Length: 142
Image 1 (tube, one colour):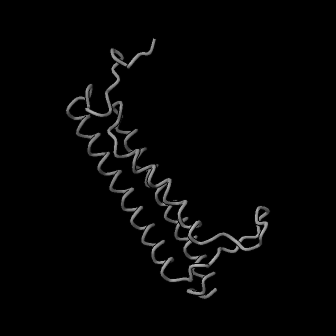
Image 2 (image 1 turned 90 degrees about the vertical axis):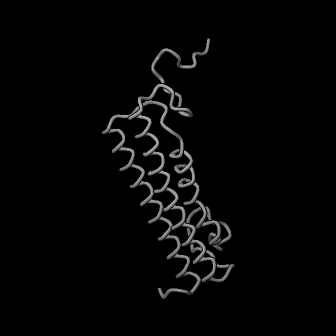
Image 3 (image 1 turned 180 degrees about the vertical axis):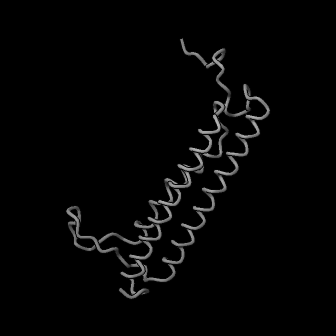
């Protein structure tokens, strides 16, 4: 028999059932703030990608000499810039939902710190890939 969590104090994430008014307010505030953080990072990463796409020739490839490079031609720049956007989109989607159970203050602070670090790492990865493509495309000097 499958239990829907009724009777165990589990709150419904969609309507806030089982939350106190203060917990619901904090959950909505966290969802909004974390969503804004992810959207900001997404805009920055898309801006970097657009700048790179418009600044270097379309056929520019990332230099790559690894063991999986059988053709010796490298990675297309369009493929190199897109993977960073996927985890940021995933985090944005996850942060838009209300919490399914109330969090402690320490748990809320931990989520803010972890998501901020994750977003910064993604933006640094995008910056590094963009810089390498700009060098490979001749826009920046080596």
